Amino acid sequence: MSTTAADSYSISELAREFGITTRTIRFYEDKGLISPERRGQTRVYRPEDRVRLKLILRGKRLGFSLDESREIIDMYDPAGGNVEQLNRLLDRIDAKRQQLRQQQRDIEKMLAQLDDATARARAALKEQSD
DNA sequence: ATTCTCACA
DNA sequence: TGTGAGCA
Image 1 (tube, chains in turn yellow, green, cyan):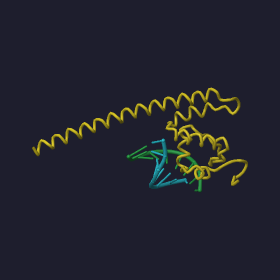
Image 2 (tube, chains in turn blue, orange, cyan):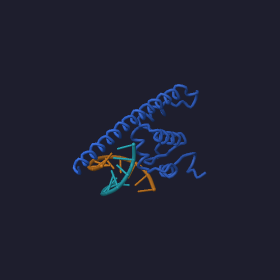
Image 3 (tube, rainbow, N blue to C red):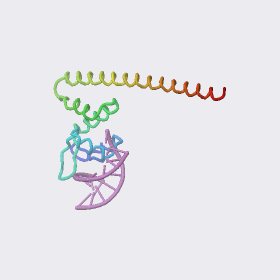
């Protein structure tokens, strides 16, 4: 393992590992999703910070906002089975699914309107040639 | 190389 | 939701 010391990571190590910029990691901290320790001025990330970062990225892939991800991640209880957290996650996924379906309906309506506009424009052109 | 702040999309 | 610049 390329660890610096007692299971800690630097911001650049995490950035490299997850394919994001150090800027992004500091941004997440600013939004309250991660709270690394400080050794003087520099941030020292522990394994649990690394896990949180991984969960943030996972939430992003699922289409969750940082606020949504934070709400879910903050419920994680290292002890216990995290029943409440998992139920919250299921609720959020359900809401996201409904949101996507609504967007899907909206897109279909817009496509239909474009079809309509196309038909009208073509009809108008045809009258020119007649 | 790291931190912070301000501006910007 | 991030990024870039300029500073210390």
